[in-house]
Length: 118
Length: 289
Image 1 (cartoon, rainbow over the protein chains, first blue to last red):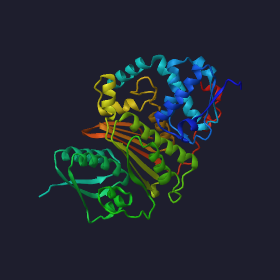
Image 2 (cartoon, one colour):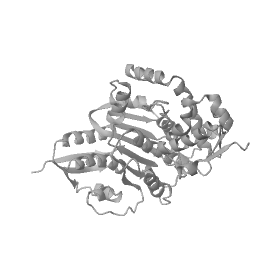
Image 3 (cartoon, each protein chain N blue to C red):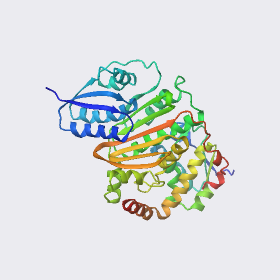
Image 4 (cartoon, each protein chain N blue to C red):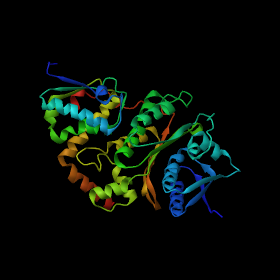
C-alpha cells in the first residue's frame, strides 16, 4: 500500500458497529468522495462492522457509480475485513448499481409497464 | 348503547387481514370503539392492530377492549407481549418465553430498534435455539424491513412484534407503518395507476426502487431468496394490496377496502440448519467492483 492510501474505518464514521440506515451510508459516501477528490486511493475497512443492510451499501458505495466509471471505482476503492455474507450483499449492490446508472430509468419504466400488462 | 366492533380469529391469513381492514374501514366514522377480540388473536398481529388503533387515538377516538371470557388467552397473550400496557393494562410476565414484545418507535430511532432486537431477540437465551447463521440472517432481514419503512413510508411510527410457535418451529415477526404504502409511492413516482397488489409485486423484484439517484430494491429481493431457502413466508399488506411468497410461489390479491399503511409479516423456520452463502464464500474481493 502506498502512503497515499486513505483508510476509512466504517465504524468510526458511523459511530456504530451496526450499519443499518441509509443516512449512515451517506456519511461513508461523503468520506469516500473526499478521498477521490483529493486523488487518494480509498481503503474501506469493515473491521468490527457486525451487521449491515443493502440500504447502507446502496448509499455508501452503490451511489458511486452515478459519478464514477467502473474502472475508476475499481482503481481507487478497496475493501477489506468484510464478512462473507456482507461481501455477497456488496457484490449484488454493485452489480445493481452498474445496471441502474447505465439504463436505470428506462428499465424501471419498462418494468412498470410490464407489470400492468400481466 | 355503544355498538361493539368484533375481531374474530385473527391469524396470518388473507382473510384475517381482510377482517382487520374491514374493522378499520367501519370504525373510521365512529367516535368510540369498543373492540371485542374473540376466539384467536395471533400475538404478532398486535403490531398491525396497534398501528390502526394509534390512528384512531390520534383522532381522539375513545378505545376500549372486551375479551371473549370463554377464552382468556387473548387478553393474557396481549398483556404478556406488552401490547395492552399501551392501553392502560398492567404487564404480565411471559412465563412461556415465546413473545418478542410489541414495540412502537419513531422512524429515526434506528439505535433503539437495534437495542430492541438485540435484547428481545438475539440475546434471549431462553428463546428456542437457532443456529448462529440463521439468527444473523433473520436479524438482517428484519433490519431490511425496518429500513424500508424508515426510508419510504413517511410514517409517524414503526410498530413491531414477534411470536414464537415452538411446536411448529415458527417465528413470526411483523413490522407495520402507517405511511404512504407501496401503491401511492410507486404511482406518484411513475405517474401510473397500479393496484395495490401490482405495486407490491413490482417492488419485490430485484432492483426495483422508487428512489431517485440512489440504487435500491435489493432488500426485498434478497429477503425473498432467504425465505425460499429457509422455508418461511413473506407477506406484505399495503393499501388494498396483498402479496405472499413462500415455497409454493407468489400469491397477489386485492382487498375490499385498504389498510392505512403497510404490514410486513415474516415467518421463519427456526429449525433450519442450512449454512447460507457457502457457494459464494470464495468470492474474490478484487472481483466486486
